[in-house]
Amino acid sequence: MGYRKNVRLGASVACLAVGTIAATGTSAQEADTLKWAVPISFSSNLTALGDTLPWVAERLNTLSGGKIEFEILEPGKLIPALAVFESTATGQIEAGYSWMGYERGQVPASALFGATPFGLEPDQFVAWMYQGGGNELLLETFEPYNVHPILCGVIAPEAAGWFKFPIESVDQLSGLKFRAAGLGGEILKEVGMAVSVLPGGELYQALETGVLDGTEFSLPTVDEQLGFYQVAKYYHLPGWHQPSTSQYLYINSDVWQGLSPTTQAMIETSCMAGVTYAIARAEALQGAVLASFEENGVVATRLPDEVLQTFRDATEVVMARESEADPMFAKVYGSMKAFQASNTAWHSRGYLPRDWQWANAPAAE
Image 1 (cartoon, one colour):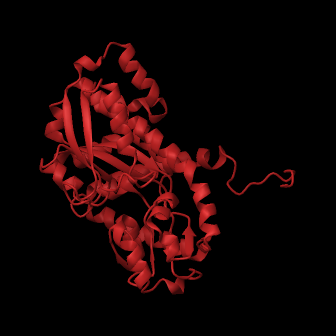
Image 2 (tube, rainbow, N blue to C red):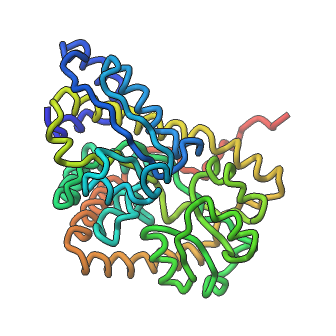
């Protein structure tokens, strides 16, 4: 069974697909025996960010009857945390797991698959990937680099960032020292911010010492573990730069092609289940963390509309420039935008408005 056919099952039936493998006689006896050391870019201790692949690895090991084993290696243990793409492409490792976009200097379109500013939300992104041609474009994008990527985790929006002071107007953005990655970082540069990319472990000290005026990194659960609320008290939302954040299992193409169809199907299906797991876990945990931030004196508030409009205008400039510079970027972004446009009527009308409230709701006791 080829990957393109298999992914059409959709994330919502991932568990059913696992059962189907067993029911149709595709047994663990037919799977290859694998033991891969799989580096990850984020610590497995980071809740709802770094713990997805360990969960996938456990399910894959069980599904294969113990024949497929991923040894999860923490960031920096085997390769640098952000070197998953390069190490996989060159064959230094069979596979690795990372957010997609750190390789955008070599593969510009990769950043779109990791997070697209003002783009698709998690449910929309998964729909585009599995039903809207996104996965086919993903494979086309990475085929020249000897990498076979598999979507293996999608999480809820990140925050717009932590700041040492409240952002109340566009005038404050010029020269603001801020950490950001991917396309979001390019957009912030476009509006005049001084953007740098620092690893997560350095951000607390950078905020504390004034090296940074602010930073974005991940979900509230992750940001809480990194302690940002202790040194920056203004937490701005929404995550316009990353409405969804996606991570991938990168597999060397030569290695992938040498696997049996059964093994490929088990890996694909386990990653599809991982997408469901990651979305559910990320969405379930954030409300309680936001409440704890407020208890610790954090002001969590929405960015002013003026600032969001400025970021949106800059997004048009950056995306046009990136599309002109790279045909594959233009092709992927065009597909995303077309899907988003076709889905808008449903996405905006099919669900209750987020600001709608029941007028007759009982008073809280």
